[in-house]
Length: 433
Ligand code: LLP
Image (cartoon, rainbow, N blue to C red; front, side):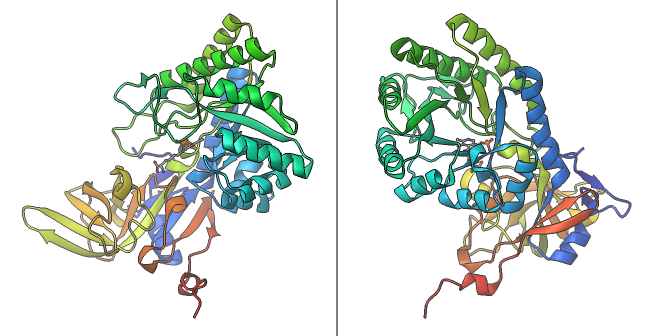
């Protein structure tokens, strides 16, 4: 019935998450409020880990893409579930390391890592640094040599697959700021250069073909292209790269129209393709890394708001204004992303009208969604926006000096705050007189 198994309706007709009454949570912790269900997150982690165990003899690692939802509690969950972690900045790296996450299972991404970020990654002993470009390779090698350590690296490659067109396409050259091009020979040249470098150990290659993808085929094609590249490197240098990181991008359910593929099907198909292609090419099956972000946390989270005002513009639309908006969820403003909303107080009732949910920023585009079917709604109600667990808290801002909401994690009937609500003192903490 709902976009996620952790959501339900109780005897009062209220929406529940992980068995907790959302109207009560809103009262107790205030709104806007992010609420995440820990059991759902752990189940999602386990589904991916199981699929690698089952389909690929456990020869792989699931690295949670922390950009989707990054805080210490989430890093701890990922660690306890034996996942790796994809970090993409000093801030994400610091959050992970300070939560006790083992650096050996970190994968450090980014198309323009600074010298200080690279140094920090080497100091921490990050297990895999994903090198994006030749300038970065040179910078990293110099640092590693100075520090007398070996940098463990993968290379980010553009496999030339665009999964965001109507049906995905392979183009000669994809316009992207990320990674090395295959078709120009750039990738081969840089990999060859790195294989001969002191203080650098090339573990493998990485690609990421997009996000919120529902097809399996582009992932299969990407793995084939990448394996052909590994075979080419072997033929030309004798070195056999042992790791293939296929990135993330697996789609989730935001609305009824979304039909995600069960997570284990990705690994099932991709494993088959990898095994077959490796045999054909005469190379060993690589260690595989996948980096799901959205699909680990997306449907495990909701946002609760308090409705402040209704504005009916006859023959045009009805606005309902909530006490948050683009500052806690910029995804509609940025991508016109669709969400399902419901009145948490009357979740058992039919949807009787359509509303446009407006935030409180001084900006007309500050909307959570337009013409969304909703139950009878009144000022003072708790409005729930579903599937906000990914790329909401992590993309939130302080525009209009609005403090960021708290994140509450529910777990089997109990709950705890994992990120405190920002205060007004937090808002001015860096201002100097
Ligand atoms: N690995 C790499 C290298 C990535 O760049 C990304 C996402 C992921 C893994 C995780 O992808 P996922 O499984 O979450 O789709 N802010 C956008 C999404 C940007 C994704 C960027 N990279 C949104 O809100 O939809």
